[in-house]
Image 1: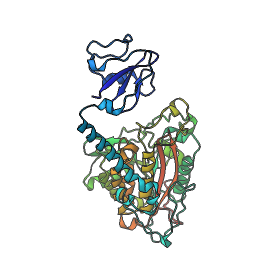
Image 2: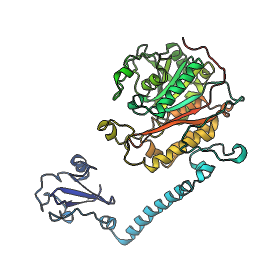
Image 3: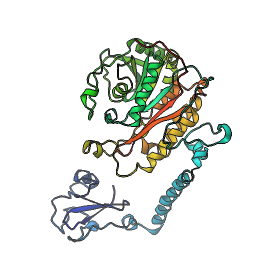
Image 4: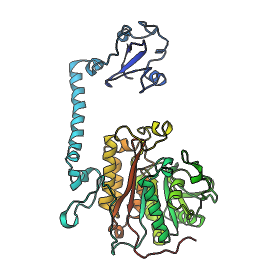
Length: 445
């Protein structure tokens, strides 16, 4: 438990100074409430309702309240930590040693060395470092997405997409992300896809199981903060035949898999499809995550289902490039109804991870290196900052498995579009591969 020292504000409001935090918290602080403060206090040491200059009955004598009507006091870290001098020296060395290691990691990035493939190769995953002509290519914060040329040596298969589905408001607000969804949807229609195989972030199954959506008429989760006229008449289209095929393919490969006849479509599935295919939903097969969130396990699911790409099925991983609900600032949506507003830039750690994710996909393209690189990113120093939980990252491994064979190594990765919501939620849209010119799979109608 943190050592706590109480102080008093000039409004006679009790406040707390926590060990090592360098800040004072009180009832008028926006950072913490009395409900949360009580979690740090010993039993029966209530803070509210005390008279000025009094102590709770069992408050330790060395933690008496300071006189009333004085400004808040923020104690120095040394005073709060206390203890003998050797312990202070040890703690100081440990803290600043960690800061030095962190600086050593970020310094090459600050110099721009990551743009030449140095250093992050060891941390963020493998990528192809040689470029034709030895020139540099802009892959960081480009104003416009890269244009990739058709490669005649590439496997004649549809591309795969790792799409950050974002908040529901992405469906209702104009943005480059919404434009990109419409673009890739129209491309899929133009090439006559047979259907969509999608793994989303909002469905995971316990134990060692996975499930496939087999509800013939799924209801949909309401798309909050978007006018109903944009989505309420859109009809889901479950591909039962392909769903059964997926179950058989995965079962034959040793997976414990079953169909789910009651699963609804949530916001990781429905808004994307509304934007991509506004004239009507193609046949869709939704595959669940497994709650162990093993990256190699989910990449193998994509590998097993990869033959469906040869028939003209479009693979989508619906998740998030940066998605940590503990870091998002909900006031922009809940109070201001402006998901793109931000009063300051996203956190440094989130931007760093987002750049590493782009590097792994854009510099690797398809093939086996992509799977290894994306799995290795889960050990990135800032992975947990960018992803408080794993479920919005794992769909990237699914599509990596679907384009992870040796013949896919010539497939190029591209950053299609990007925006940030709620300040710290990065909605990166990444595509690997491209449509073969003139190829048409016959369509689903």
